Length: 501
Image (cartoon, rainbow, N blue to C red):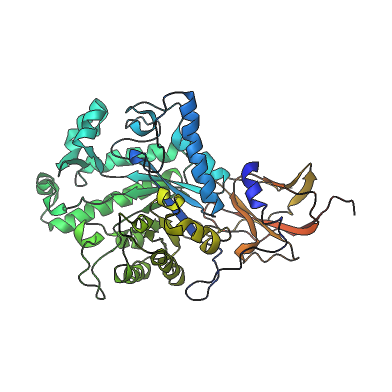
């Protein structure tokens, strides 16, 4: 972790008492120790990042600094997961042998901005103890204008047999077997070349107004007499299964998730629900979870009241032990959108925590950091008061790591240096969590004792004040790539004082 960030961490240690009491939610529960706290960071049109293309060295530095400012603010509010949009509409934000670079970063399709935005984002997320998941738009490949601007680099031009034009936009046809092969090649390239923590599929469905999607020739060739809706659903199911297997073949610890429509299917409590994943766009995420082809589902639940709460229950009841993480539409707090009240969002967080959700993801980052109706302050000061570890994934590997040795503490100049022995990472990235207490024994079950988590190095530097005297107790744990946490190390006591005692 970088020292500029650890300065924020050490604010906890320079106060004799906590400034915020533990927050209690819907059922009186405390802030959880394990929770996914995520944002969708949108790159298409530069909606969240970047807000301008690189034209020279100065603008490159400013573009990178934009992301650092975003991540610093997320870190300040104890977020731990970033879903970064890496494939937009037939273009990508990283160097690829398969699809062109997005124009968002450089101003021109196929041109890099002088650095690799994805590698940069991953490194900076990891410095702050956050995971970085590659948000991958699956079937849409652009409007007529986008295809024209991409020219010969567009998949529509390179392989027109895979593509269908629908309502003025182009899509890969899910029913063509070569579409699956093409997407597998992209996923393999991405997972092989980057230290991502997950790959997150968006638009992994048939498009809006699917009844008008022009795939009749494909259906006639491959449908084999099955009902159209069933055949389409099976196309998506088979693709999901093959993409999951491709990811796990390359790196078993990389998580696979998706963002389906927020309502899985029509339920008795709300029979007139309108759009659903299953009936409207031929998504079957429950099938993916039941057949162990997903690690996490993040439904886009941008609704209120009876269009939200019973559908959370529906997802959780059918999750097969996988994570359900409702995606919350904080953009709807904006007056020009739906003018929701702040408590509309906090009620949804409370409900998700109380009834078995693994966390929440917010759409989108800019609405959060703009503090629309106080949402950022509310999360920072109440809901996300303390750091949270990411929940364990025992279906990947349930073996706990060995108990680490005692943490080492020494004062060097105006800093405390905490260090520990490394764990072997042949099977994927291990992370570390440092706990502390100012009142003696540490309770590792309580999030208020977490000093920092998601650490990927073996040392932590904490700026200290020469004017403070206090006794500090530290310990640490190690977590496997499946986030199985070890038993805590022996505690280490350090008395902070400018006098020798």
